[in-house]
Structures are given as C-alpha cells and as structure tokens.
Length: 584
Image 1 (cartoon, rainbow, N blue to C red):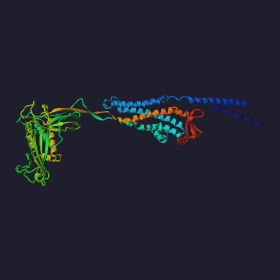
Image 2: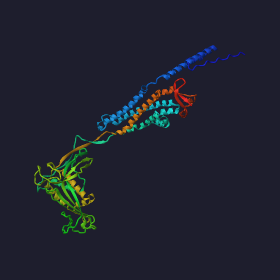
Image 3: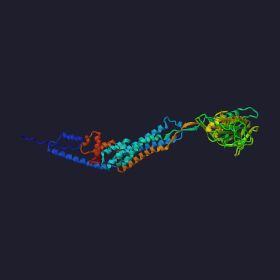
Image 4: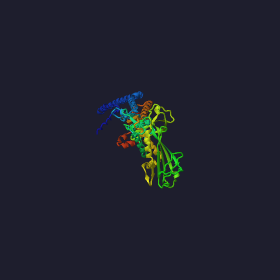
C-alpha cells in the first residue's frame, strides 16, 4: 500500500502578530519545508522585533515623568476650595444677620434654609474630596506589598458613604491609618447638618414702640382746694374708700396706661402714705377702771389696757380704736390701736397682744415700675418721712401745709403740699371706720375687726401696709396727679447666632482639605500615578491571574470569599506595563 505522506504541521502563530496576519497565515499555510522554515524565520524576526519594541516601550514608560499633581488633582483642589468657600459664606451670612430682627430679613427664603443650602454644598464637596483621596490611597496601599483583593473592594465601599467607611475602619483601617482617618471624617459628616441647624435661634425680645408711650401717675400734693367748713370733697371721699379697700384686699393699683401690654417706667418719686406698726407686747391693765363698753389701748405713755365690760370673755376677741388729728407741724394723721386675744380663757387681760399703728404722709420712691401681661409691679422702696417745711415760693393758703423730706436738702421742687382741711375729713371717717370690736360669740359690730383678725393670717402690720399702699395709689391718680412717661414695648423676634455650634462643621471641612493635602503629598512622594476612583484604571490594569479559576466565579459571595484568600500587588508585569499581579 502506498504510504500516506506525513502531514505538514501548521506553522506556529505569533500571538504578537496582528490579527489579520494570523488569519492570513492560517488560511494559506506553506506547502513545503522551505516555506515552513522561512515562515518560522520571519516569525522569529517579528517576535524579536516586537520584544525589542516592547522593551524600549517599557524603558520609555519607566523614564516617563509623572504628571504634576496641580494638573491631575485640579478638580479635587477646586472642589475643596468650593467646600471652604461655602463654609465661609455661611459664616458671612451669620455675621450679617446676628442681632437683627427677623422682620428685617428681606429674602423669600429663610435664613435657616439659605444656610442649609450652603452647608449641603460644602458637605457634598468635602465628601467628594474624601472619596477621591481614599481611592487614590487604595492604589498606594496595593503598590506597597501584596494585599487581599477583598481590601480593594473595602476601599471602594469606604468612598461611597458612611456605612462603607465604618466597615473599612474596622477591617482595613489598622493597616491603612491615613485612609482610615478619611473614612472617619466621612462618618462624622452625618452630624454636620444637625449642628448647623443649632446655630440660629429666634428669641423674642422687646423694643420700644415709636408710636405710643406709657404713662403712670405721681403727685407732690394732696389738695382739693377745700377750705375750712366746706362740705366733703370728692377727693377726700376717694381716699376714704381707698382706705377701706386696703383693709379687705391687697390687690390695689394706681391708674396707668400701657397700650402695648408691656411697659417700663423710669425711677420716680411721689407723695404717699406710710404705715408704721409697733408691737406693744403684753400690756398692763390701767390702774383706774373704765366705764366704757369696750376694751381699748390707752395711747399715752406708758400705754395700758382698759378692761371691757366683760372681764372674762370666753371667745376670740379683737378690739380696734382709732384717733385722728392733723396739723402742719407733723405729717401723722392717724393713730390706730388694735388688741387681740385668741384664747381669753387661758390668757389674762394683762397679757393681751396689742399693736399701735401710725399712718402718716411720706415720700415713696419707685425704682423700677413695669407692666407685663396683667401684672403691674409698682412696689415702692426707701420711703422717707416728711417734716414740716416752709412755704417758700409755693402757694400760701390757710390750711395748706408744706412738708419736706427729713434729712435732705430741700428746695421748692422738693416740697410736698397737703391740705389739712381734706385730711380732717378723712380723719373723721377713719376714726369711725376703725372703732370696731369682734367677739366670736357675740359677732362683730362691723367688718373691719373681722378682716383684721383674718387678713394675712392675722398679721396686723402687713394688713396696715396694704391700707397705706391703697391710699397711696389713690393719691397718685387724684386730681393733683401728673403723668410719668415710660416706654411702651413691643415684641420683636431677633436672630441669635450661637457660634460654638459652627465649630464642628467647619472642623470637618478643614479635615477634608487636610486629608486631600496629605494624599497629594504621599502620592507625589512615591511618584504614584493619580488613578483615584477611575474605573478605566481597573479595567486596563486588572488582575493577571494564574489559570482561569477566577473566571468561573459568578456569585458575589463566592467572589468575596475568594477575594479574602487571593492577594495582588500593583507592579509592572513582564511586558513593562502596570497591573495588579496575582500573588499566591
């Protein structure tokens, strides 16, 4: 049988040949051995030529200078500048609105909303800078030694948000502390907006109203123009009513005007009535008997108690006696005696408690008078006693008495005038009003004794102070009153800036800028290419692995498990290029 000719082997195909040449070679194989040798020779020449060209290209790659960072990281630098600029804009806005009223804000957007916009832009820019910096440190990290492929994914996850950054800190952070600091800043930016929202508050303050004013009464005289023998005047009657009102209530106030509901008045002084009560303690029984039906306190010196018609009362007992006398030589116009026994059965007459109270004209000072809501704070302080003065250049009318402040140099403008004829009318009513008694078994002959025993827990001096205050308030709003002008206040919402709350956001922006600077310095120092977050860099310089096992991994969990075991090093391959080289 004829022997079949031995098949001619196909010539080796040079992998470095262009695809077109490879296909042509396969489609037109050489027909003889010489052709085969010629083809092999040509292939070797081309291989050597390609190899030599690759070597020269690699040499040029090694010798090619690294691009300057100011051009490669220009966008990151500009974005960092944007972040800082927005934070400066926030501070400028806060400086502009600090202390101003909210009504003066003319923009259609609120101050908080405007600040939130700038803060959001600043935060977003800072996060972008941090993300790019972490991605750049990823390439430096893998160029230092072989690393797990899982770490490559951890770097990418850290650049995408706070959760990935937190996982990165716990896994890769101890081995890449610079990148971990950037990841920490990303986590901390979660609280950036809440801190900024605390910077502005809107308290309500009070400012003077330019349209209205407040008024309150004061006076330097009590004079209705009454002459001796004239009938009772309205002013005297009003003072009598105020005296009675003070016995039964402490809620009295003078007339005033406050259109806005919130007013203040400057310090001023006024003529008023003062009460001075002395606790007489346990008084002796007067040596001489008394035929009167009531027990009262003798006002002479020494004081003593007269017995009542019932020497052994068995019930709670209170007696009130009053005398009134006024002259231009003294400002006192009433003496009131009050005797009280809560348990007459066990307490002898000689040890009854007694008070002696004196009502007199005085000068009262009002240092700070305010009206807020429904409450008028109009409490007098530092009352001064009045003594008889000279008429000076004042009115010279019979019965009109001048008084001046004791212990002070007084001029005409410091003289207080009181019509004795008016006070005599008041004294008659006072003596009648305060002549009273109370016996819980027999009742009271009027309500004054009952009120004195019950008002303010039986505190006689305090009740008499209420009487004096009520009479003062009436004098200040009488026909002789003049008006003190105060300030009517209106509520205004102010813008208050709490600067400490801005420290945290500003510190985060500063940290992001500092992180970018550190990343630039490290990359420049190691002459590393600025690939940052580029996906093209990963595609062009992917892992050169041994075998094709990695190509058969389809499930994410399987790839993560394999990445935990596999390692790669960013270095130059055998062709002179830069790639992630698979390492066992």
